[in-house]
View 1 (cartoon, rainbow, N blue to C red):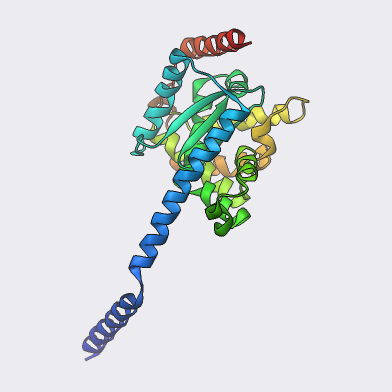
View 2 (view 1 turned 60 degrees about the horizontal axis):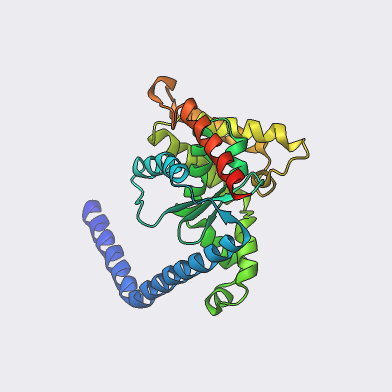
Length: 265
């Protein structure tokens, strides 16, 4: 009898849920998602054009090909479609990287010059991809500017300034950091790379250098604590990892970037 009663109670619960679902206007919900997707695509194009007005994009086929050889495998090894992602290297002494709406990622020449290995660049890229995959960019834009303003198309200059100086909430930054660890592990890049990037940033925090990626993110020492915990939970084996790019190829890339800068001077 008790079993029958529980079964009838379960059926009743399913029926109630079904009736509630019938009341939901799914067409409206999907239209909202479609509208937001179109909004993100439009914002991505507008902001990218404004970023290109702010910075000179490095148009060196060898440099971009090498950067893609680091970036594309990171996406593919995590089963992330490469179709919509674009990576741009821009001329700037700022040590910076940031994500735009619609999965566009900007990296500065200053960041390339700052980092000691391609593994470290992979760590930064993994963090920015996490922002894209978790839709942090649009969430932050809607929170800070409101959907109506974004839909109206006004204030795009402010939107661009916000995106290029991205200061996500600590919650979103932590989510992106921890997701980056998983991305690196899946791509067989040692996830301790992201902790080592934090070590480098920690040193330069006390210097007069402009390290913009630090200034718009939580303090490296705080981030290293939860990153270490996340990495420990993976029970990683250093022998299973590979280099994103050999040290010789990384040095060659940095030399090529410097050469591109000299040629554009």
